[in-house]
Length: 319
Ligand SMILES: C[C@H]1O[C@H](OP(=O)(O)OP(=O)(O)OC[C@H]2O[C@@H](n3cnc4c(=O)[nH]c(N)nc43)[C@H](O)[C@@H]2O)[C@@H](O)[C@@H](O)C1=O
Image (cartoon, rainbow, N blue to C red; front, side, top):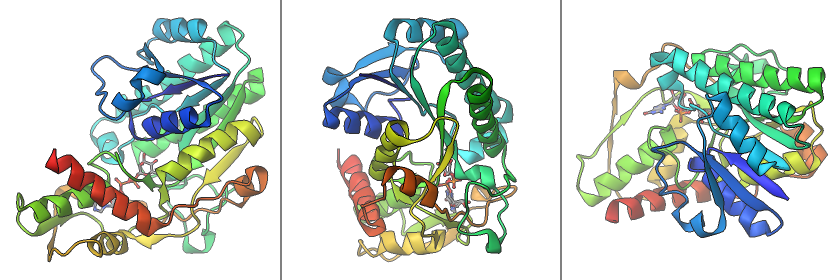
């Protein structure tokens, strides 16, 4: 079986590559863009095959799909940082939707019989009322950022290509996920890096923060990539599934958890640049539908994830 991961050089992509290799039942292919950094996948390079591909270019995507003829596609590549989407809404929209359309069209053009997982997001739910939590897949989508709108578009394109052409697309709406290798702009990694810098003495004992009242449902990335596999193995094409832990904490509580693994004393400073024009107040997911279908459930405790993330940054900064 051949599995193609778009965005294999990224956070979730690198963990998924590792997981698929550990299973031993798939040949792993990954797409990357010219100038992508390879540090997350250096250890995988001897075992995977890479295809340089600009997903926005239909010709480039056609060539890749025609040559690989994958059995499974995990479409993870995206502009995934919400604040960037406020500054570059056009780029976010184009990257996230055009790339996916090009993949779908290539699969149609070369008549590839494959299953496709697309990485949709809890951000699509956007403005959620307290009585709507934990959020089910049937909740209305009320996106609050250009990123969220781009994910709604990806989600509905998946729905539409399934119904129009029978493409075997499974949509996963993943809630926040983190762990080692998380990009440093995202809140968990950003705070963990700041703590590790303070420990090293390379930064004053001040942590810069944004909105600490927001609530998020965090799952370890190493559990999330197993869910992506389960989605293609056992999920129903055309369906959409939430992937979440079912528990939420405030960003402030998340920071306290990170700090519980450190001796440093810190002060907090709100950096106005970190506040968003509109922030999603609460994302707490109900993943009963996915659990019932696949048997998946997260096994890594939140505290473990936070400790591993902090240790990741300690190691990065030592090297
Ligand atoms: C599911 C969804 O998950 C992620 O989107 P996100 O929730 O925006 O992730 P984040 O880590 O940037 O922010 C989480 C929360 O934390 C607040 N916050 C406070 N202080 C800082 C801060 O200093 N930095 C950041 N980045 N956020 C901060 C911020 O305002 C927000 O309320 C992406 O993977 C996305 O691709 C995705 O699909």
